[in-house]
Amino acid sequence: MSTLKVTDDYLDGFAKTQIKQLIQQINGTYPGDGTGTMIIDHVNDFAGGAGSGLPSGTDNYTLLMTGGKSFTEAATLTKSFTTFAGSIQKQFQAVNGALDKIVLGMLNAKQTFNNAEDEALSAAQMFSILSGGTPPPAPPTTTP
Image (cartoon, rainbow, N blue to C red; front, side, top):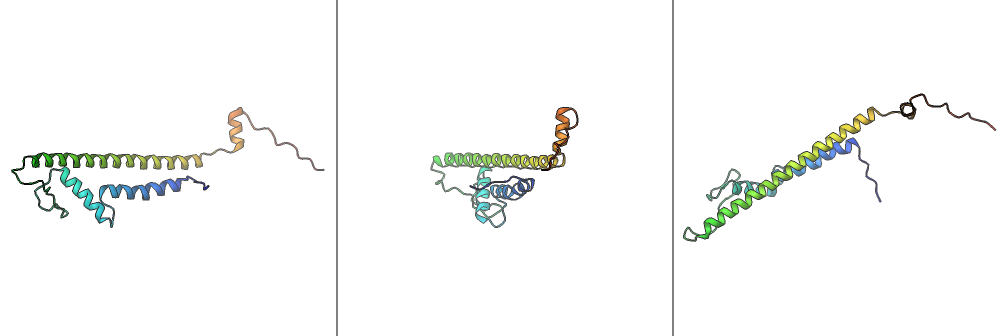
């Protein structure tokens, strides 16, 4: 079984690299992730009510093929899909907000670790505080 040692450097690195990458993936801004960017762009386009069939700013086509205007359920399907995409968009935003809070918590923990290390007491200082006096002298050493 391996041991996980949580240090301030570990927290700093985890918050600034791995969680940052996850946030970028959720936002569709992770470098080299064309598929993720396309998915996020589609969700944002449809959540915004796009659907003219013309490419959006990132060349995503935004037309739902719901049938012609004579098909009465086409408008209902388009509206439902827009609502669905908006729901997904809100979930991405909620996860993004939660990750931001996690990063803040990790950075606060890092700061606490740093402060604790700087303010650490020796055993003698702790005994002095707890007993209200000075620590007893060390026991005498005897030599045989």
